[in-house]
Structure formats: structure tokens, C-alpha cells
Image (cartoon, rainbow, N blue to C red):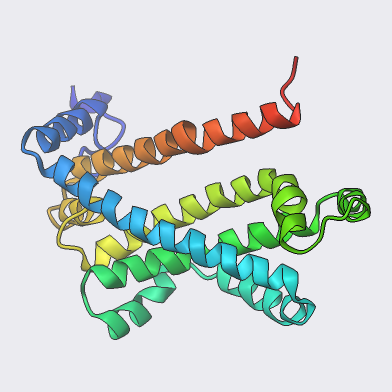
Length: 232
């Protein structure tokens, strides 16, 4: 039956081999440990990127000078692949958790800040004029008008930031992690076990899509319902 094979098993594994390997990883507990370690890192790194990204975005929107000078720089830094920050993280923090969290944070921060900036700049100016005529200004203007009006763009930016953070996590773990999904992926590569590589890739995709649907998807639905954007 060898003539029926379209490719060699060591080049691209069969679905049976992938799911068998996946079950073995679940059974011996290595997959659960890796998922928990990766989840801890991305929660910390992504949380930091949200805080920093929101602060940077709000600052750029508030001050025109910073907008003119920092916006192109932030856009340029956003185009850098996350793996480009690995040499800096290793030199500054060494091969430890802080290095991975740094890569995650940097990889996601700029996407969040760009979303904040774009969302607040592109809201309907009539909203701001109407609010000002009714006495809204300063913090109240941002809290009651600007931020709510820019929420759809902000949520889209947070989703994009999540995807960048997830990719940055894998890049960092493949270099310096002692445990995590990226490390399990690298073990599969080192052992030339393509089934393990594909199994971990499948887990990464499922986790990424699951978080998007369960968290960001629900937030988007709530926003669309509140804005009356859902189709009848």
C-alpha cells in the first residue's frame, strides 16, 4: 500500500498520527502543564500591553505634537516581527520569564495604541460638538462620548493585539522557555517528530480561536447590540 501514499510520514503526518500524539501529550500531563505556563505568560504580557497601549494611545490623541512625531514611529515599530525583540530581551533580562513577557508586551502594545489612536480620531465630529454644546469637557467628554464612540475600533485593536501577543509568546517560548507550548513545539522539532509539531500547532490554533470567540466575540456582539448594528 506504499504506492497510495502521497508523501512521506516524516514530511507531513497523517491525522491519525497527529491525534494519537495529541492524546499522548494529554495523557502524560505535558500538554496541560505547557498550556498553563503559556496562559500565565500571555495573561501578564497581554495585560501589560493593554495598559501601556491605552496610555500611549490616549497621550498621542491628547497632544498634537506627540501625535505628529510619535505616530509614524509607533507604526514603524508595529511592522517589526516580534522575534526581532528577542535579542534585546535576552540581553536585558537573560533567559527567563521576564524576557518572554517583555517580547509579548512589546509585540502587542503598538497594535493596541494604534487602535486607540485611530478609533478616537475617526469618531463622528458631530458627537463631540453636540457634547460640548451641552457642557461636556475634559475627562467627562472622553468618558461619556469619545471612548464609547470609539469602542468598536478599540475592540478590533484589542483582538489584533491578542493575535500579536499570541505569536510573540510562541516566538519567546521557542527560544528560552523551559516549559510551554513553544517549548513542546521545539522538542518535536529536535526529535524530528512532525506529529508532535502538528499536534501543538493544532492546540495553538484552537486556543487562539477559542479566546477570540468566547471573549472578544461576545464583547463585539454586546457592542453591536448596544449600537443597534445587528441585522434584523
